[in-house]
Image 1 (cartoon, rainbow over the protein chains, first blue to last red):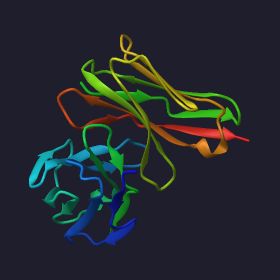
Image 2 (image 1 turned 45 degrees about the vertical axis):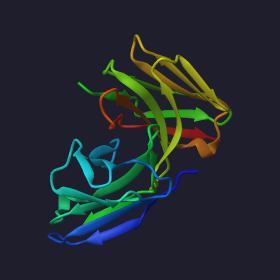
Image 3 (image 1 turned 90 degrees about the horizontal axis):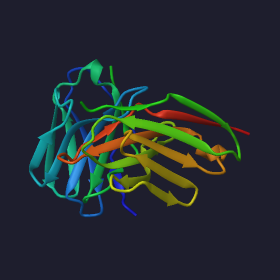
Image 4 (image 1 turned 180 degrees about the horizontal axis):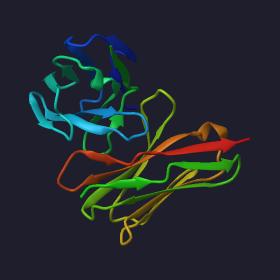
Amino acid sequence: DVKVTQSSRYLVKRTGEKVFLECVQDMDHENMFWYRQDPGLGPRLIYFSYDVKMKEKGDIPEGYSVSREKKERFSLILESASTNQTSMYLCASSQGQPQHFGDGTRLSIL
Amino acid sequence: GEDVEQSLFLSVREGDSSVINCTYTDSSSTYLYWYKQEPGAGLQLLTYIFSNMDMKQDQRLTVLLNKKDKHLSLRIADTQTGDSAIYFCAERMDSSYKLIFGSGTRLLVRP
């Protein structure tokens, strides 16, 4: 079974802080993804990576950056957190099809 | 444009069949997916279908794809209270890795 592990289930940070969300997968997948899910909506893609050090913007990249230094790990960075980034963040990985998701990180920015 | 639409809510009695519907707009979709999300949790992959297939069955789950009408459905046989959750339909276009999700259908199973 594919295991996608997100480092925190719940996180509370302050406005202006630099925030790191970490994701690790154990299946040697090429592709990793970060999505954001707001209440009443489906997930929306922030960034994805198709190889180490390779990344592409998704639909809502503003205010975020990513890092993929090792194949198994994909980090989402909020450079200067703002209250409108309070949301559920979902990491996924895939090798072709389909995408497998982690349990999510519920991030609150105060 | 890219758009996936689902009805918001479905309520069924335990033991009945549930049918959750989804429509999508992009004819270049290659794969279509159904994910389940329980409260406060991530997305659990239920099943997916390649666009050249009409139907896929996996135990209690049956997926039907009408490519002409761009309509996807998920039928859950013998629905149980543990099936209560939000169900998301998603499509993947031919030229992209990304998934486009609907807003989800909340399924409530009444005892």
